[in-house]
Image (cartoon, rainbow, N blue to C red; front, side):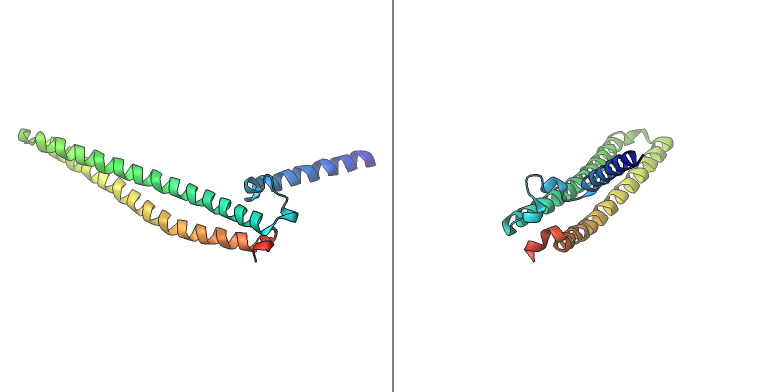
Length: 144
């Protein structure tokens, strides 16, 4: 029974270590580097790679939001141009439908603009927080 308990403890410890590695934000950047014997140059490279990865993710997200905003603006402009061309009909139902669609599109555009501004503000904070987190990480002591 004691051997089984020891084996079970070992398995749990290995699982805990695996979980820690999966959750560790530096793991992808420490692939070929031993954190215990990291040089200042290695630590700087890890820091730069980590910050670049964060920057890339934040820029990718900003680009997604910006592209959606551009698509909404473009769709609205096309819809308005189409309405202008077909305005000869003077149909009140068509005009009402146009106004409703424009209103919905403007709402979506406003939301996307707010998301973009919020993302930009959050991105600066996330960048600063990551820098602080890296400086506080004990594996990066050689940078201090």
